[in-house]
Image 1 (cartoon, rainbow, N blue to C red):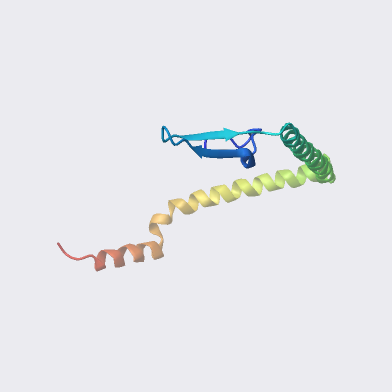
Image 2: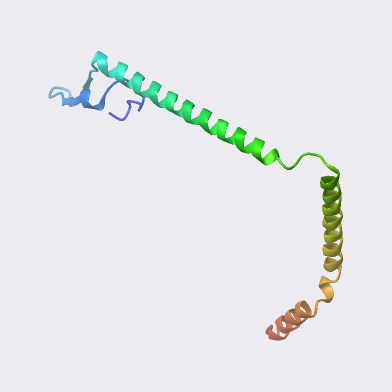
Length: 124
């Protein structure tokens, strides 16, 4: 019973196991009605068509959202000035962060934490 794959046209309802008395082996018999395979294929087709429809709908929604987000971002002099200002502010922020990292070793709070850690260590 475990060897039948999930997408097999054999229905689990159509599987029976019989014990053979003479050789103590289990015999497995299975059958499938012709209509079962057709129903399974129709179900798979319906599911795939439904997935395709929902994917197309999602694509249309995302395309519409993309177009709406593009509005207000057209190239203009005001936008260029604002973008340049933003870049300069970001660059200044990066420079200040780098300068702060240089002084991190001289931070009084970090120095206090290191000295208290040193004082709390047991002597060897």
